[in-house]
Structure formats: C-alpha cells, structure tokens
Image (cartoon, rainbow, N blue to C red; front, side):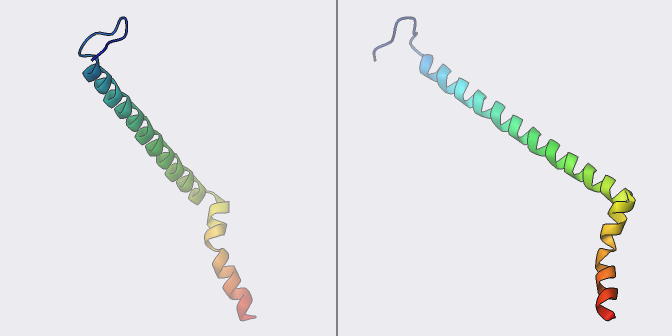
Length: 70
C-alpha cells in the first residue's frame, strides 16, 4: 500500500470511524428536525382548535348539510 505524504498507516480505519460518526451526526440532526417540525405542527393544530376560526371550520360540514336540505 502506498501512503501520501503526511498519511500514516492505519488511517483507513480512522477514515471509516469519521464517516460513521459523520453519518450518525447527520441522522441525529435529521431526526431532531423531524421531531421539531412534528411538535410545532401539533402545537399549531392545537392552537387552531382553540380559536373561533378553528371552531368554525369544524362546523363547516354541518352548514353544507343544512344548505343541501333546503
């Protein structure tokens, strides 16, 4: 095996360790981002349900049904 200047024997396992660590960091970052978006989405839905506008949306189907009976 030929090594480049400054490269030590045994650096391949170090490279593999760095790649694994890098993948884990990226996976953790993605997982945290997905969890944060999910949490924010649930909070947004909960807030929308507390507002009069959210209540109006839930009754919109009833208004349509009453309208169709006429």
